[in-house]
Image (cartoon, rainbow, N blue to C red; front, side):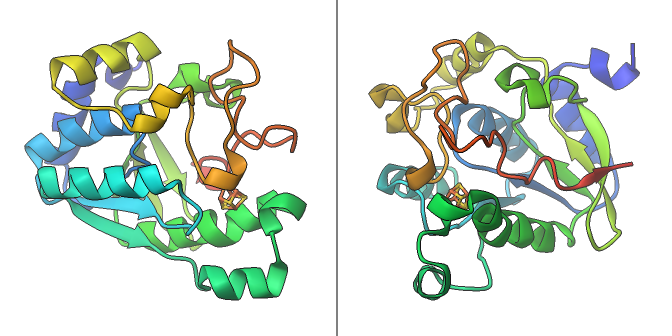
Length: 224
Ligand code: SF4
């Protein structure tokens, strides 16, 4: 087995943060992202926490982000699209209904990749169990951004189960985004998130009926 795969999540975090190079974490404030954020902030409290500010999040997500930003004194960096929501809808209307992949490209993928070009290490809360598209995820992968820059994409909880995530949050007094209490199992932009349609697939409430399973931020970058 790859040496990195045999390390615990905390060991992966500690080792990667010892490496030279600027590090950041992307955070949607879902449970697994909160686990990795908690581990990372305890080693490096001022790590930039990149939040994809699409303009379409649930009010509960914004409130939770702001509450934990204050509670943990987080260095939140809101990554903004080139257009405001008003400009975007004036130009395209409800693009999330007509062309969700284009909408994600404009409001998530492009801002993220622009934001990531400042860093060499990118922490994520991705897990293999979340979807078939993530089944082959490694704890540390090299990703090439569209501008040609390479960075290490680090997913310390890649091999964790949902149960592991909830146990960590409970043990570390991390409250959950309240939307979980309403039955959501994967939470993104409000117009593209419904309750799961397949109880065995936690991401089945994302872009339900649109034939789309990923926003593109984890599929558009190239693996080296
Ligand atoms: S998740 Fe939906 S609203 Fe958000 S950027 Fe993608 S298509 Fe647009």
